[in-house]
Image 1 (cartoon, helix red, strand yellow):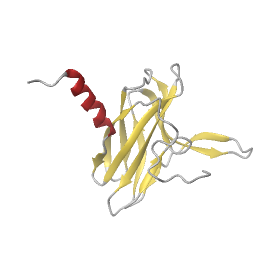
Image 2: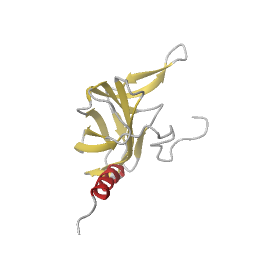
Image 3: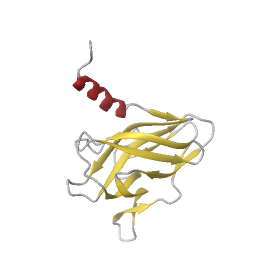
Image 4: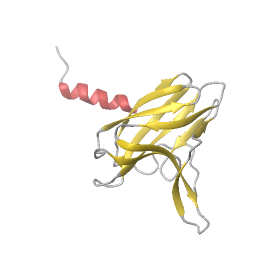
Length: 159
């Protein structure tokens, strides 16, 4: 007896929510968003864990969903205005620890979207680490997820 097509498709969507490993690096709780249906930019968020004994660093990301992909964070300028800025040195992933990419903080930024990011789609993202090398992950697009997503238990009240 063959499984129904819907069951197989559902299983594939669930696979995007499962952790992905490369050497000692694990990516979990990944999701992507676009600001609106007409957006030219979007972002991906995730928890990057390092089960190894050496620190590593996410140095860049790539995806065919955008003309340019950058590692970004939010920083307050001299006038108290929060702005997104590129983090050229990348994000440190401490040995035995994790780095959370979340809304309002560090994230993977998609600039010049080549297609809409529709709820339920997946986006293929290649992460490049200094030591672990290249990791390709499939990131589900979730436009309903609240800002509390991809927290990894790290956020404190008042942040």
